View 1 (cartoon, rainbow, N blue to C red):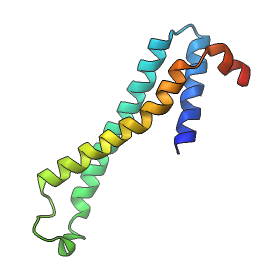
View 2: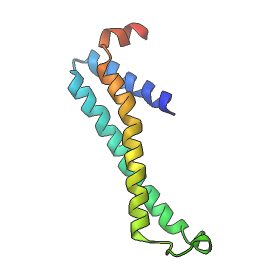
View 3: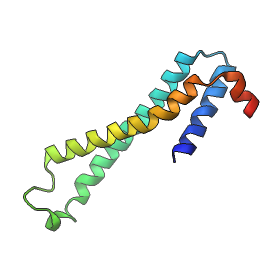
Length: 105
């Protein structure tokens, strides 16, 4: 999955650099897309988890199925992991020279 994401970022970077964007603009474009996908996944995942907790209610001990602390902790943890996973290919794409990227194509 990381390789596919990195390939997509390189494609965005190639197109943007060909159109005259600088490295900072490319970095913000990729970061903005990443944060949009992460926030959309967090919202949809939280809603789905809220409704699916009823299925796992009998497996829980000493906590309610909709405990807000557990929900917030899980969402924050997954968002941090998503940002870290996206930071690696984003940094590599930002440091990539446009001519090298186009030559490899």
